Amino acid sequence: MATLRAVFADVCLVSDRRMLRGRRYGNVVLAGALRPGRLPVRRLAARVAADPVPGTVLHGAALDTFAADAWPVTDADLT
Image (cartoon, rainbow, N blue to C red; front, side):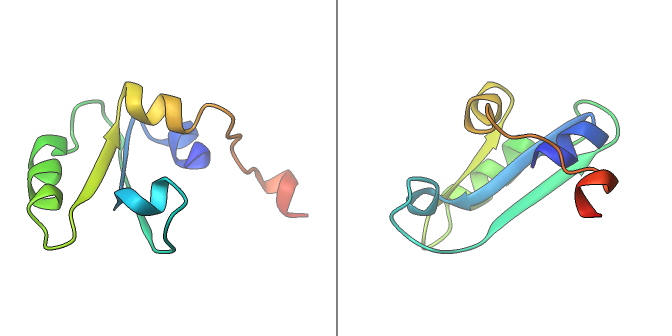
């Protein structure tokens, strides 16, 4: 997530709420846009909340809090 945030101006995370609390294993979907305000965050949040297994969308301040200690991965980290 930190790597995407280093490249994209707008990033959000979509996931099962229980997984983010460490109570379940699962997938995280990250979405990024080159320009701020281009992600349909409200629509994503509404769709995710209406799912049979409700999830959550982290964006803005909530994503800042979640990713507070994360550092981007660079090419130097891969060698």
